[in-house]
Length: 156
Image (tube, rainbow, N blue to C red):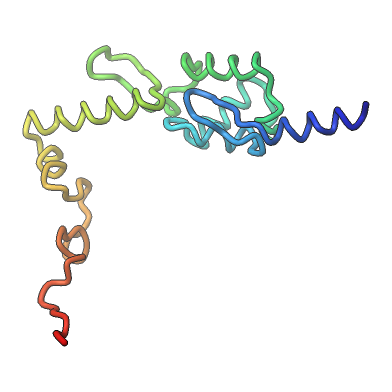
């Protein structure tokens, strides 16, 4: 009977858990596994563990379905300070939101398209694939640097 329990413990670590449409290995801890989800940072992962009451060192493979649904519901409607939320003062609603996964990617794309449409400085920089935040461009960000201009191979 003890052998069966050992097998279930081992299989719980080997299983793959799906949290917020992301597959996470069961061997990972809750703290590092949540950080694998797009839109959840290490700081937010830490805050989630503290708010829900899970130990950070608990393995994700040992979580029950109820605990996984509890994490999912909390992340969809987080009760956290504003500095941990990734969409503060949304342009459309004016409220603080937290976006995850494909919603985050779509919103980012729409923001870039809006910047290009209103022809802002950042929009121009995005369109020309140059850095936005004041980095120097003499040595980096060259679009044709991999072509090796001026170098010819020897003909045999």
